Length: 495
Image (cartoon, rainbow, N blue to C red):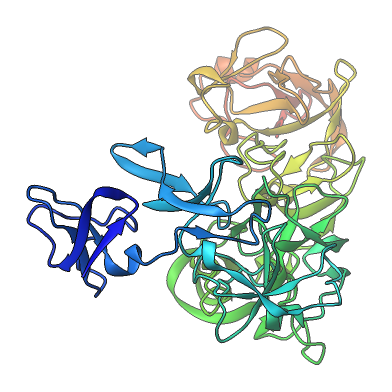
Protein backbone atom coordinates (compact mmCIF):
# COMPACT_ATOMS: atom_id res chain seq x y z
CA UNK A 1 0.00 0.00 0.00
CA UNK A 2 1.43 3.36 -1.06
CA UNK A 3 0.38 6.85 -0.01
CA UNK A 4 1.25 10.38 -0.97
CA UNK A 5 2.22 12.40 2.09
CA UNK A 6 2.02 16.21 2.22
CA UNK A 7 5.43 16.61 3.88
CA UNK A 8 7.15 14.52 1.17
CA UNK A 9 5.13 15.23 -2.00
CA UNK A 10 7.67 14.17 -4.65
CA UNK A 11 7.72 10.45 -3.84
CA UNK A 12 5.22 7.87 -2.67
CA UNK A 13 5.56 6.23 0.74
CA UNK A 14 5.00 2.53 1.39
CA UNK A 15 4.71 0.40 4.55
CA UNK A 16 8.05 -1.30 5.22
CA UNK A 17 10.93 -1.49 7.66
CA UNK A 18 12.90 1.75 8.16
CA UNK A 19 15.71 2.17 5.67
CA UNK A 20 19.31 2.11 6.84
CA UNK A 21 20.29 5.51 8.21
CA UNK A 22 16.68 6.62 8.84
CA UNK A 23 16.38 7.35 12.59
CA UNK A 24 13.57 9.71 13.58
CA UNK A 25 10.02 10.39 12.53
CA UNK A 26 9.79 14.10 11.58
CA UNK A 27 6.25 14.38 13.01
CA UNK A 28 6.72 13.13 16.59
CA UNK A 29 10.55 13.12 16.59
CA UNK A 30 10.63 9.62 18.11
CA UNK A 31 12.83 6.87 16.79
CA UNK A 32 11.20 4.94 13.95
CA UNK A 33 9.96 1.55 15.16
CA UNK A 34 10.00 2.66 18.81
CA UNK A 35 6.25 3.12 19.38
CA UNK A 36 5.01 -0.24 18.09
CA UNK A 37 3.60 0.91 14.75
CA UNK A 38 4.61 0.28 11.17
CA UNK A 39 6.53 2.85 9.19
CA UNK A 40 5.83 4.53 5.86
CA UNK A 41 9.13 4.86 4.01
CA UNK A 42 10.00 6.56 0.76
CA UNK A 43 10.10 4.08 -2.14
CA UNK A 44 12.60 6.13 -4.17
CA UNK A 45 16.20 4.89 -4.32
CA UNK A 46 18.57 6.81 -2.04
CA UNK A 47 15.79 8.60 -0.11
CA UNK A 48 15.73 7.86 3.62
CA UNK A 49 12.50 9.67 4.50
CA UNK A 50 10.21 7.79 6.85
CA UNK A 51 7.22 8.49 9.10
CA UNK A 52 5.26 6.42 11.64
CA UNK A 53 1.99 5.00 10.30
CA UNK A 54 0.07 6.56 13.19
CA UNK A 55 1.69 9.96 12.52
CA UNK A 56 0.95 9.75 8.81
CA UNK A 57 -2.75 9.24 9.59
CA UNK A 58 -3.04 12.44 11.67
CA UNK A 59 -5.55 14.87 10.08
CA UNK A 60 -3.90 17.77 8.31
CA UNK A 61 -6.43 20.26 9.68
CA UNK A 62 -8.27 20.50 13.03
CA UNK A 63 -10.54 23.01 14.73
CA UNK A 64 -9.59 23.58 18.37
CA UNK A 65 -11.46 25.40 21.16
CA UNK A 66 -8.06 26.83 22.12
CA UNK A 67 -8.17 28.87 18.88
CA UNK A 68 -11.79 29.32 17.69
CA UNK A 69 -11.22 31.95 14.93
CA UNK A 70 -9.25 29.76 12.50
CA UNK A 71 -8.50 26.09 11.76
CA UNK A 72 -5.03 24.75 12.62
CA UNK A 73 -2.87 23.02 10.00
CA UNK A 74 -0.34 20.26 10.69
CA UNK A 75 3.08 21.47 9.53
CA UNK A 76 6.75 21.61 10.31
CA UNK A 77 7.66 24.37 12.71
CA UNK A 78 10.02 26.92 11.21
CA UNK A 79 12.11 27.58 14.35
CA UNK A 80 15.20 25.36 14.49
CA UNK A 81 17.66 25.22 17.39
CA UNK A 82 20.74 23.03 16.83
CA UNK A 83 18.90 21.33 13.91
CA UNK A 84 15.89 20.51 16.12
CA UNK A 85 12.42 21.88 15.38
CA UNK A 86 11.27 23.32 18.73
CA UNK A 87 7.98 25.06 19.37
CA UNK A 88 5.96 26.18 22.41
CA UNK A 89 2.43 24.87 22.64
CA UNK A 90 -0.20 27.58 23.08
CA UNK A 91 -2.30 25.24 25.23
CA UNK A 92 -0.04 23.61 27.82
CA UNK A 93 2.74 26.23 27.43
CA UNK A 94 5.43 23.52 27.12
CA UNK A 95 8.19 23.11 24.51
CA UNK A 96 7.87 20.25 22.03
CA UNK A 97 9.71 18.75 19.07
CA UNK A 98 8.28 17.81 15.70
CA UNK A 99 5.20 18.96 13.82
CA UNK A 100 2.67 21.40 15.26
CA UNK A 101 -0.92 22.26 14.46
CA UNK A 102 -0.48 25.89 13.53
CA UNK A 103 -2.30 29.05 12.45
CA UNK A 104 0.14 31.18 10.47
CA UNK A 105 -2.13 34.22 10.48
CA UNK A 106 -2.16 34.40 14.30
CA UNK A 107 1.25 32.81 14.96
CA UNK A 108 -0.47 30.25 17.19
CA UNK A 109 0.34 26.56 17.49
CA UNK A 110 -0.62 23.50 19.52
CA UNK A 111 1.21 20.24 19.98
CA UNK A 112 -0.36 17.11 18.53
CA UNK A 113 -2.09 15.97 21.75
CA UNK A 114 -3.44 19.34 22.94
CA UNK A 115 -4.91 19.93 19.48
CA UNK A 116 -7.38 17.06 20.04
CA UNK A 117 -8.72 18.23 23.40
CA UNK A 118 -12.45 18.71 23.09
CA UNK A 119 -15.31 20.19 25.07
CA UNK A 120 -17.79 17.58 26.31
CA UNK A 121 -21.51 17.72 25.88
CA UNK A 122 -22.05 18.79 29.49
CA UNK A 123 -21.83 22.53 30.13
CA UNK A 124 -21.85 23.79 33.71
CA UNK A 125 -24.60 26.34 34.24
CA UNK A 126 -23.18 27.41 37.59
CA UNK A 127 -19.92 29.26 37.64
CA UNK A 128 -17.29 28.51 40.21
CA UNK A 129 -17.27 31.27 42.88
CA UNK A 130 -13.59 31.92 42.25
CA UNK A 131 -13.80 32.27 38.46
CA UNK A 132 -15.75 34.62 36.23
CA UNK A 133 -16.33 32.34 33.22
CA UNK A 134 -18.46 29.16 32.95
CA UNK A 135 -16.49 25.93 33.16
CA UNK A 136 -16.90 23.11 30.62
CA UNK A 137 -16.19 19.39 30.77
CA UNK A 138 -12.97 18.52 28.89
CA UNK A 139 -12.35 15.37 26.89
CA UNK A 140 -9.05 13.81 25.70
CA UNK A 141 -6.98 15.71 28.28
CA UNK A 142 -3.28 14.73 27.88
CA UNK A 143 -1.71 13.37 31.04
CA UNK A 144 0.91 15.42 32.95
CA UNK A 145 0.18 18.55 30.89
CA UNK A 146 -2.35 20.55 32.89
CA UNK A 147 -2.50 20.99 36.66
CA UNK A 148 -5.59 21.40 38.78
CA UNK A 149 -5.79 24.93 40.20
CA UNK A 150 -6.98 23.57 43.58
CA UNK A 151 -4.75 20.60 44.42
CA UNK A 152 -1.89 21.30 41.98
CA UNK A 153 -1.88 17.71 40.67
CA UNK A 154 -2.09 16.68 37.01
CA UNK A 155 -5.47 16.60 35.29
CA UNK A 156 -6.69 13.87 32.95
CA UNK A 157 -9.98 12.59 31.54
CA UNK A 158 -9.98 9.36 33.53
CA UNK A 159 -10.89 8.46 36.22
CA UNK A 160 -11.55 11.96 37.57
CA UNK A 161 -13.08 14.24 34.90
CA UNK A 162 -11.54 17.63 34.21
CA UNK A 163 -13.42 20.91 33.97
CA UNK A 164 -11.96 24.15 32.80
CA UNK A 165 -12.00 27.43 30.96
CA UNK A 166 -10.54 27.48 27.44
CA UNK A 167 -9.98 31.22 27.48
CA UNK A 168 -8.04 31.30 30.77
CA UNK A 169 -6.29 27.93 30.45
CA UNK A 170 -7.79 27.03 33.83
CA UNK A 171 -8.30 23.38 34.78
CA UNK A 172 -9.86 21.74 37.80
CA UNK A 173 -10.62 18.15 38.82
CA UNK A 174 -14.30 17.28 39.12
CA UNK A 175 -13.71 16.24 42.74
CA UNK A 176 -11.87 19.51 43.49
CA UNK A 177 -14.67 21.51 41.89
CA UNK A 178 -17.05 20.11 44.50
CA UNK A 179 -14.78 21.09 47.40
CA UNK A 180 -16.09 23.98 49.44
CA UNK A 181 -13.25 26.48 49.69
CA UNK A 182 -13.87 29.30 52.15
CA UNK A 183 -13.33 32.66 50.41
CA UNK A 184 -11.65 33.95 53.58
CA UNK A 185 -10.29 32.19 56.64
CA UNK A 186 -8.07 32.63 59.69
CA UNK A 187 -5.03 30.37 60.00
CA UNK A 188 -2.87 29.69 63.05
CA UNK A 189 0.28 30.37 61.02
CA UNK A 190 -0.54 33.96 60.01
CA UNK A 191 -1.94 36.85 62.06
CA UNK A 192 -4.11 38.32 59.26
CA UNK A 193 -7.12 36.84 57.42
CA UNK A 194 -6.24 34.84 54.27
CA UNK A 195 -8.23 35.33 51.06
CA UNK A 196 -8.72 32.80 48.25
CA UNK A 197 -6.89 34.23 45.22
CA UNK A 198 -5.56 33.27 41.79
CA UNK A 199 -1.90 33.60 40.80
CA UNK A 200 -1.29 36.06 37.94
CA UNK A 201 -0.16 34.26 34.78
CA UNK A 202 3.31 35.87 34.86
CA UNK A 203 4.12 35.16 38.52
CA UNK A 204 5.31 32.20 40.53
CA UNK A 205 4.25 32.01 44.17
CA UNK A 206 6.10 30.10 46.89
CA UNK A 207 3.95 28.49 49.56
CA UNK A 208 5.11 29.71 52.95
CA UNK A 209 4.33 26.35 54.55
CA UNK A 210 5.77 23.69 52.22
CA UNK A 211 8.14 25.95 50.17
CA UNK A 212 6.67 24.55 46.93
CA UNK A 213 6.69 27.04 44.05
CA UNK A 214 3.52 27.15 42.00
CA UNK A 215 1.90 29.14 39.21
CA UNK A 216 -1.51 29.30 37.52
CA UNK A 217 -3.27 27.97 40.61
CA UNK A 218 -5.54 29.21 43.32
CA UNK A 219 -4.02 29.90 46.69
CA UNK A 220 -4.60 31.85 49.88
CA UNK A 221 -3.00 35.29 50.08
CA UNK A 222 -2.86 38.09 52.62
CA UNK A 223 -4.09 41.57 51.71
CA UNK A 224 -1.74 43.11 54.29
CA UNK A 225 1.42 41.11 53.45
CA UNK A 226 2.14 41.18 49.71
CA UNK A 227 4.75 38.38 49.81
CA UNK A 228 2.65 35.91 51.80
CA UNK A 229 0.94 32.98 50.09
CA UNK A 230 -0.12 29.45 51.04
CA UNK A 231 -1.29 26.60 48.85
CA UNK A 232 -4.83 25.37 49.37
CA UNK A 233 -3.64 21.96 50.56
CA UNK A 234 -1.38 23.50 53.21
CA UNK A 235 -3.94 26.08 54.28
CA UNK A 236 -6.64 23.49 54.91
CA UNK A 237 -4.23 21.06 56.60
CA UNK A 238 -5.13 21.80 60.22
CA UNK A 239 -5.82 19.61 63.22
CA UNK A 240 -9.47 18.66 63.71
CA UNK A 241 -11.35 20.75 66.22
CA UNK A 242 -11.71 17.67 68.40
CA UNK A 243 -7.91 17.44 68.69
CA UNK A 244 -6.30 19.46 71.45
CA UNK A 245 -3.77 21.90 70.02
CA UNK A 246 -1.75 21.46 73.20
CA UNK A 247 -1.44 17.70 72.66
CA UNK A 248 2.03 16.37 73.37
CA UNK A 249 2.13 14.19 70.23
CA UNK A 250 0.89 16.71 67.65
CA UNK A 251 0.71 20.50 67.83
CA UNK A 252 -0.01 23.53 65.68
CA UNK A 253 2.60 26.25 66.13
CA UNK A 254 2.87 29.75 64.75
CA UNK A 255 6.44 29.12 63.50
CA UNK A 256 5.43 26.51 60.91
CA UNK A 257 2.42 26.21 58.61
CA UNK A 258 1.85 22.46 59.09
CA UNK A 259 1.04 20.46 62.23
CA UNK A 260 4.20 19.21 64.00
CA UNK A 261 4.53 15.69 65.40
CA UNK A 262 6.62 14.64 68.39
CA UNK A 263 9.24 12.08 67.33
CA UNK A 264 12.14 10.34 69.07
CA UNK A 265 14.85 11.60 66.73
CA UNK A 266 17.76 9.15 66.35
CA UNK A 267 19.92 11.32 64.08
CA UNK A 268 21.31 14.76 64.87
CA UNK A 269 19.29 17.34 62.93
CA UNK A 270 19.61 21.14 63.21
CA UNK A 271 16.79 22.93 64.98
CA UNK A 272 15.29 25.52 62.64
CA UNK A 273 15.10 28.05 65.46
CA UNK A 274 18.41 27.80 67.36
CA UNK A 275 20.31 25.83 64.66
CA UNK A 276 21.72 23.47 67.31
CA UNK A 277 21.44 19.70 66.96
CA UNK A 278 18.16 17.96 67.81
CA UNK A 279 18.28 14.49 69.32
CA UNK A 280 15.72 12.57 71.34
CA UNK A 281 12.21 14.06 71.61
CA UNK A 282 11.91 16.45 68.66
CA UNK A 283 8.98 18.11 66.90
CA UNK A 284 9.08 17.24 63.19
CA UNK A 285 7.03 18.24 60.18
CA UNK A 286 5.74 15.06 58.54
CA UNK A 287 3.88 16.85 55.78
CA UNK A 288 5.39 16.01 52.40
CA UNK A 289 6.03 12.30 52.93
CA UNK A 290 2.50 11.51 51.75
CA UNK A 291 1.74 14.53 49.55
CA UNK A 292 4.34 14.78 46.74
CA UNK A 293 5.35 18.25 47.90
CA UNK A 294 8.92 19.23 48.63
CA UNK A 295 9.55 17.27 51.81
CA UNK A 296 9.47 19.56 54.82
CA UNK A 297 10.57 16.77 57.16
CA UNK A 298 14.09 16.89 55.72
CA UNK A 299 14.86 20.18 57.39
CA UNK A 300 12.00 21.19 59.69
CA UNK A 301 12.98 20.15 63.22
CA UNK A 302 12.37 21.97 66.50
CA UNK A 303 13.54 21.45 70.06
CA UNK A 304 10.57 21.19 72.37
CA UNK A 305 12.05 23.99 74.50
CA UNK A 306 12.45 26.27 71.46
CA UNK A 307 8.73 26.03 70.69
CA UNK A 308 7.97 27.26 74.21
CA UNK A 309 9.42 30.72 73.48
CA UNK A 310 6.87 33.56 73.64
CA UNK A 311 5.49 34.79 70.34
CA UNK A 312 5.92 38.44 71.35
CA UNK A 313 8.30 40.13 73.78
CA UNK A 314 9.06 43.62 75.01
CA UNK A 315 12.84 43.98 75.09
CA UNK A 316 14.92 46.78 76.65
CA UNK A 317 17.03 47.02 73.49
CA UNK A 318 13.91 48.14 71.59
CA UNK A 319 11.50 49.65 74.10
CA UNK A 320 9.44 51.45 71.45
CA UNK A 321 7.56 48.45 69.95
CA UNK A 322 6.80 44.79 70.61
CA UNK A 323 9.02 42.20 68.89
CA UNK A 324 7.42 39.17 67.23
CA UNK A 325 9.05 35.77 66.70
CA UNK A 326 8.88 35.10 62.94
CA UNK A 327 10.54 33.03 60.23
CA UNK A 328 12.60 35.52 58.20
CA UNK A 329 12.67 33.26 55.14
CA UNK A 330 9.05 34.33 54.48
CA UNK A 331 9.94 38.02 54.35
CA UNK A 332 12.05 38.87 51.30
CA UNK A 333 12.68 42.42 52.54
CA UNK A 334 14.15 41.13 55.81
CA UNK A 335 16.17 38.18 54.53
CA UNK A 336 19.90 38.27 55.31
CA UNK A 337 19.57 41.31 57.54
CA UNK A 338 21.75 41.57 60.64
CA UNK A 339 20.78 41.32 64.27
CA UNK A 340 20.86 44.80 65.80
CA UNK A 341 22.57 43.48 68.93
CA UNK A 342 25.37 41.19 67.69
CA UNK A 343 25.47 42.38 64.06
CA UNK A 344 25.55 38.82 62.72
CA UNK A 345 23.24 37.74 59.90
CA UNK A 346 19.77 36.51 60.85
CA UNK A 347 18.86 33.75 58.37
CA UNK A 348 15.88 31.91 59.80
CA UNK A 349 13.85 32.65 62.92
CA UNK A 350 14.31 35.83 64.95
CA UNK A 351 12.40 38.46 66.87
CA UNK A 352 11.51 41.31 64.53
CA UNK A 353 9.63 44.57 64.82
CA UNK A 354 6.58 44.64 62.56
CA UNK A 355 5.89 48.34 63.04
CA UNK A 356 5.82 50.50 59.94
CA UNK A 357 9.26 51.56 58.70
CA UNK A 358 11.06 49.78 61.56
CA UNK A 359 13.63 47.09 60.69
CA UNK A 360 14.79 46.09 64.18
CA UNK A 361 15.82 42.41 64.36
CA UNK A 362 17.03 40.44 67.36
CA UNK A 363 18.43 36.91 67.40
CA UNK A 364 16.63 34.58 69.79
CA UNK A 365 19.93 34.09 71.62
CA UNK A 366 20.46 37.85 71.88
CA UNK A 367 16.91 38.32 73.17
CA UNK A 368 17.92 36.50 76.40
CA UNK A 369 20.35 39.33 77.22
CA UNK A 370 18.27 41.65 79.37
CA UNK A 371 20.98 44.19 80.21
CA UNK A 372 19.46 47.67 80.14
CA UNK A 373 20.57 49.90 77.25
CA UNK A 374 22.51 53.11 77.79
CA UNK A 375 21.29 56.61 77.02
CA UNK A 376 24.18 58.77 75.86
CA UNK A 377 23.91 62.52 75.42
CA UNK A 378 26.35 62.46 72.54
CA UNK A 379 24.21 60.12 70.40
CA UNK A 380 20.52 59.95 69.51
CA UNK A 381 20.23 56.12 69.67
CA UNK A 382 20.45 53.67 72.53
CA UNK A 383 23.84 52.06 73.18
CA UNK A 384 24.69 48.64 74.55
CA UNK A 385 27.68 47.58 76.61
CA UNK A 386 29.01 44.23 75.46
CA UNK A 387 31.79 41.76 74.90
CA UNK A 388 33.77 42.61 71.79
CA UNK A 389 34.35 38.91 71.10
CA UNK A 390 30.82 38.48 69.76
CA UNK A 391 31.63 41.02 67.04
CA UNK A 392 34.77 39.16 65.90
CA UNK A 393 32.86 37.01 63.40
CA UNK A 394 31.01 39.89 61.74
CA UNK A 395 31.17 40.17 57.97
CA UNK A 396 34.75 41.18 57.05
CA UNK A 397 33.45 43.21 54.13
CA UNK A 398 31.99 45.62 56.68
CA UNK A 399 34.63 45.55 59.39
CA UNK A 400 38.16 45.25 58.05
CA UNK A 401 40.67 43.00 59.80
CA UNK A 402 37.89 41.90 62.13
CA UNK A 403 38.27 45.05 64.24
CA UNK A 404 35.83 47.76 65.21
CA UNK A 405 36.89 51.36 64.84
CA UNK A 406 36.09 53.87 67.55
CA UNK A 407 33.80 56.59 66.24
CA UNK A 408 35.31 59.14 68.65
CA UNK A 409 39.10 58.75 68.42
CA UNK A 410 39.05 56.92 65.02
CA UNK A 411 41.46 54.21 66.24
CA UNK A 412 40.85 50.46 66.31
CA UNK A 413 39.23 49.03 69.43
CA UNK A 414 41.43 46.25 70.79
CA UNK A 415 40.00 46.00 74.32
CA UNK A 416 37.69 43.20 75.44
CA UNK A 417 34.59 45.37 75.88
CA UNK A 418 32.98 48.12 73.85
CA UNK A 419 30.01 50.44 73.59
CA UNK A 420 28.04 49.89 70.37
CA UNK A 421 24.92 51.49 68.99
CA UNK A 422 21.88 49.24 68.60
CA UNK A 423 20.72 51.04 65.44
CA UNK A 424 23.80 52.26 63.54
CA UNK A 425 27.56 51.66 63.22
CA UNK A 426 28.63 53.84 66.15
CA UNK A 427 31.36 52.15 68.28
CA UNK A 428 33.17 53.64 71.26
CA UNK A 429 36.17 52.77 73.41
CA UNK A 430 35.38 52.47 77.08
CA UNK A 431 37.29 55.67 77.82
CA UNK A 432 35.64 57.41 74.85
CA UNK A 433 32.17 56.25 75.79
CA UNK A 434 29.55 57.17 78.39
CA UNK A 435 31.18 55.70 81.53
CA UNK A 436 30.04 57.63 84.64
CA UNK A 437 32.86 59.12 86.69
CA UNK A 438 31.36 58.15 90.07
CA UNK A 439 29.17 55.13 90.90
CA UNK A 440 27.76 53.31 93.91
CA UNK A 441 28.27 49.58 94.12
CA UNK A 442 26.44 46.93 96.13
CA UNK A 443 29.73 45.27 97.14
CA UNK A 444 31.14 48.51 98.57
CA UNK A 445 28.31 50.56 100.00
CA UNK A 446 30.32 52.65 102.45
CA UNK A 447 32.08 54.83 99.82
CA UNK A 448 31.51 55.77 96.19
CA UNK A 449 33.84 54.38 93.51
CA UNK A 450 35.70 56.63 91.08
CA UNK A 451 36.69 55.90 87.49
CA UNK A 452 40.48 55.46 87.53
CA UNK A 453 43.09 54.44 85.02
CA UNK A 454 44.74 51.04 85.47
CA UNK A 455 47.16 49.81 86.65
CA UNK A 456 46.84 51.72 89.90
CA UNK A 457 49.79 53.59 91.33
CA UNK A 458 50.25 51.17 94.26
CA UNK A 459 50.06 48.23 91.86
CA UNK A 460 52.88 49.75 89.82
CA UNK A 461 54.96 50.43 92.95
CA UNK A 462 54.45 46.90 94.26
CA UNK A 463 55.33 45.44 90.84
CA UNK A 464 52.58 42.83 91.08
CA UNK A 465 51.99 40.39 88.20
CA UNK A 466 48.35 39.46 88.79
CA UNK A 467 45.46 41.91 88.88
CA UNK A 468 42.10 41.02 90.43
CA UNK A 469 38.64 42.54 90.74
CA UNK A 470 37.43 42.64 94.36
CA UNK A 471 33.77 42.44 93.29
CA UNK A 472 33.85 39.16 91.35
CA UNK A 473 37.24 37.96 92.64
CA UNK A 474 38.36 37.13 89.11
CA UNK A 475 41.49 38.23 87.27
CA UNK A 476 41.08 41.48 85.34
CA UNK A 477 42.78 43.20 82.42
CA UNK A 478 45.33 45.65 83.91
CA UNK A 479 45.15 47.93 80.85
CA UNK A 480 41.45 48.73 81.23
CA UNK A 481 40.14 51.47 83.57
CA UNK A 482 38.55 50.45 86.89
CA UNK A 483 36.25 51.88 89.54
CA UNK A 484 38.34 52.47 92.65
CA UNK A 485 38.03 53.51 96.28
CA UNK A 486 41.45 54.84 97.35
CA UNK A 487 40.55 54.87 101.06
CA UNK A 488 39.67 51.15 101.13
CA UNK A 489 41.78 50.13 98.11
CA UNK A 490 38.68 48.44 96.68
CA UNK A 491 38.90 47.75 92.93
CA UNK A 492 36.01 46.77 90.63
CA UNK A 493 36.45 46.27 86.92
CA UNK A 494 33.84 48.10 84.89
CA UNK A 495 31.91 45.07 83.67
